[in-house]
Image (cartoon, rainbow, N blue to C red):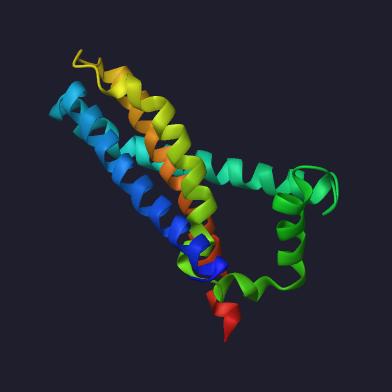
Length: 160
């Protein structure tokens, strides 16, 4: 298997693991918070999570555009370089695989969910406010991971 093939396998596995873990996390919150609290909080949490993830994405984009350069130690090659190259060739995001588009974000999101998982395995009931907050956090992480996909879709009309 080629090096890129191995990387794609890791990225695809991370995406599948992330979405499996986030679904299990939402089910755990629903179980602990109860159906009524889950139904009442799901839609507001979904909208707020999406907007918070968009805000975070914009903040990260601004930082990577404003500080350092592609050769800045540690984060330059991984973050600043790709962000700035994207301004030169914005259509390239539409030509990469889905695993390349979402893989790194899914790995980061999975790490965050794994840190949260010990809180979710308890059987203690959640208050409606805690149900909302935990659901908001999980949906925020999902939206943050999916932000690269949304960004890709925004460039599809430019790809013609």
